[in-house]
Image 1: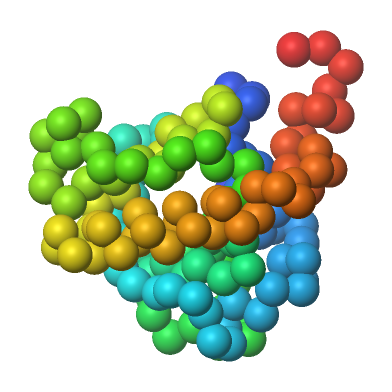
Image 2: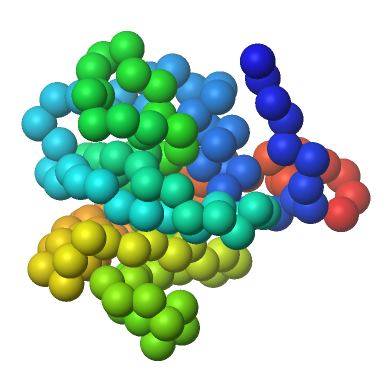
Length: 154
């Protein structure tokens, strides 16, 4: 069932997907237990620009997403973003022309999300923003999973 992405290299998404495929302990983060924040968000896919609803879990500097909200120890995240690699989180209604939209940006990528309400959007921005501040001081390059770094040429 392992569908491989055939796409250009160099992306936060591949880092996120690669991390969920190859790492089973997610740096020891027990995403199923006492998360800092959870909720439904609609996120935009990177290659196929469709919007999909996913259950998001923020814990210990990682933003995980799942297909459904019944998250247990056995759940497999559909992706995970190390928040420490993110530079900004802010509203994006003006960019997307959609209400309750926000964006999360790293040096090389921007991901877009839509919350179910203005309050949910603000709460997510605040929670992720707080997490960025808490974790950015301790980030090292080795924490970022990016398979591009393994290739000799671009």
